[in-house]
Image (cartoon, rainbow, N blue to C red; front, side, top):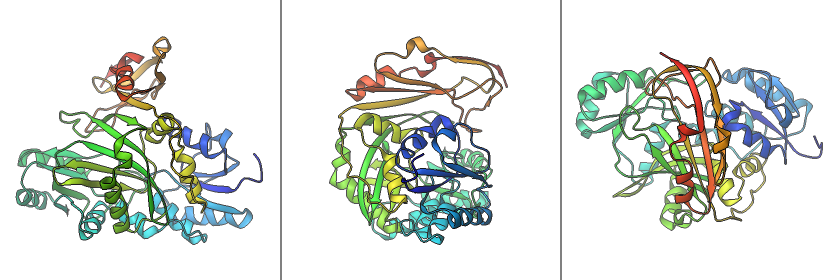
Length: 411
């Protein structure tokens, strides 16, 4: 790798299926030193070096980062992994970089703190209370009025999120949510949130912030599962480079004010909002790039590379102005099994990857165990289409299961 490129510490890696594109983009402009619990495999072509460390152990992670920084000139700390983003922000400040604010990142990660900050700023928020027992949850739900949403206070990916329309459903949802966890993520004493259900379509907006200025990069319109237990299961996303919401002054104001409320001034965020009768209502602010390949969809549709923007801010460099070299659209759909299963064979039907279908990617291997929501998020693979219009892209990825031949043993 060219030694004249700045060096970034990359905290965590996760799987190649949904993250390799980030390494590929960022490594073109920066050298990467990976801090991760396992030796690099698919990451190897994109990194300069690595150090093995359990990123869930903050003290060890910080000590390792300092050791690397003593021997090498580090330009910044980069992290897209929900589990480690708070630690990465703290390490960044310890190393003398000013772009990440650990308090703001922690406020975003704690959904109760996010709610309070945004509500205090005068923006609409659902009624919401963190609880630690089922009787508390039932009392809060009765005060709010059904239906309610039950969710973990600081997890991601819709893990443990359920809708409850009555007390019996709430009791079942509480057990699920109270047991939800992610390795390396702190568990609050009041771990479960019960809040008002917001009716309306849901969008996610990835933005880049530099010195408090908000630039929306991509708006993803979510396709949710609909029926329990899939009501919050994200089954796909649609992106349009010409989406009028990208230049909507009301949305920009909501994004700018909500981020100012939590103190977030530098970095990339993935903000989920509901379009309600009260206007745009922020559901959560995630202090990292969007998952589910949403930044990749935005890049394919518009030509703007969110990964590079995130890396630039991490390095203290003002990101490129958000422009759209293309006016295309992109859609992604996730193929899911009909039942819990252990995969015995799997392949992509390559003959169907044609026309606007850009990619059909298999996310499982033989031996993989898949369990449907609410137990886990079960995905066989994903299909991406790129076209001139959203309707064309959507049509190309309809019925995503047809792109895969997968057999398995029912569980």
